[in-house]
Image (tube, rainbow, N blue to C red):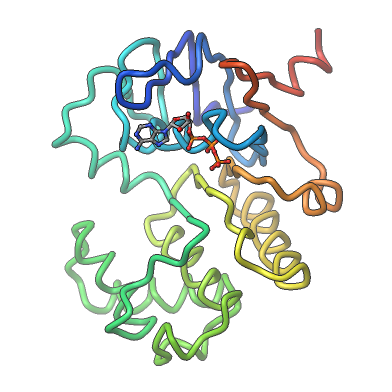
Length: 229
Ligand SMILES: Nc1ncnc2c1ncn2[C@@H]1O[C@H](COP(=O)(O)OP(=O)(O)OP(=O)(O)O)[C@@H](O)[C@H]1O
């Protein structure tokens, strides 16, 4: 049976005081890959930011990875983030420490204490993204594609049910984008992680077709709804 891991019902998405998206409705199942497309400035990032608790949900009912976002107290946002992975376009690694230390930093910040378990987890996620032997490297010693793999490894640390990715291939050449897409689809398929990925990259979408949510004129259109209705 399918398990819904993101549910958005009658949500209005605001950026500051401005209504950016109106009456948004969709749900995403475990293991599903969903693109979020739409012209620049139509609200893709605002929607993702609402889903990971950076923008408050003022109206509507939204559940992400088992957390209800309505009136979420800011103190609870770290608990939501523990069940979510987030990947951005610009690699947001700590530049003053190596890959291993970057990952350890996140584990400690999210409550891990046992050194042996942390070591195992770091090796596990580096293995999953094909960087098992690169833990000693500093971010500046890595290519853009490798840094994006570290970001994805970091997103996997707490075995999230959902990964939200905001233009993860935006800074990469076509070949490296391809490798990152293969990795994301592998994570989806083999670990059952749902991924919502905002992108402008139609070359990527054509090569890896999947369900699409499109932001347009303050609405979100769902390709899945078009197929079934
Ligand atoms: N920090 C902010 N404060 C106020 N308004 C903002 C802020 N960030 C974005 N906006 C506005 O909110 C609207 C939606 O922006 P958003 O960044 O969500 O669009 P987007 O579809 O992700 O765009 P892009 O494809 O360029 O990333 C735009 O009108 C934008 O100008």
